[in-house]
Image (tube, rainbow, N blue to C red; front, top):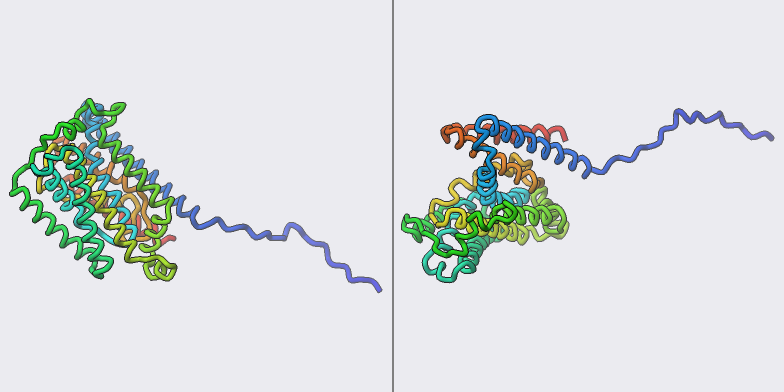
Length: 339
């Protein structure tokens, strides 16, 4: 009995299933596009500055000044990025910087020298972050309300400590950090601190369990809880981190200005949030990049510097910043709708 012969197989019609690329590659590709876009915007601003005021803008001292000014708000923005990625918000960062700076520059604190000023600034920042974290994580308060209350309280306490007066720093070791003799290979010490904070922040967010938990809490708090993450404790840690960054920024501001004032850190919360947003951090949480936030800080600082060199009014500068924020949010929404 002959066996039925199967028809010849046409290999050209065979379809081999193709492996789907992992999802993280798509996220990385979008992140690279955002980073390149921000670098492009920064390059255009540098070009504008070089064309409008070539001698002043491209001067080494001016570029050092831009980086130094970016360092203070940049450290705050690193902490803010973590908070926003977790789905929270911190409106009190500017007020915390002010309180930490004036508390660290009182006559009693300055008697302990460099270590006393640094220690006080950091402790005050962390203490304020602890209050925010406890109210939000364990007091079930909305982050907007809790940090708004801290904003008002910290500003009021800073005014009470200074009585509206500027507190001059008299500790030589602190003031010397702002001098050109302290520069390392032409880089101001404040910029080096900012670079270290940025690198540590990037590593923590992208290479540690803490960073993965932060993203998980921001993406879906209930799913994170069911996965075994202590959501409340994680949120507490994040506001402690934000307070720590404010304390460090307060010390940098003391070095930069040589004084402590209750008006320090004015509108830092808005600048930090704006820098994080244009850097690609979602206000709804679950996604954000330290690199993008830092580029956002550099963009805003460069804009401020260009406007100052060209003697343009500050109201036009604020309009420009607002337009950039709106454009960044619209790009985010368009990106989210296509993914």
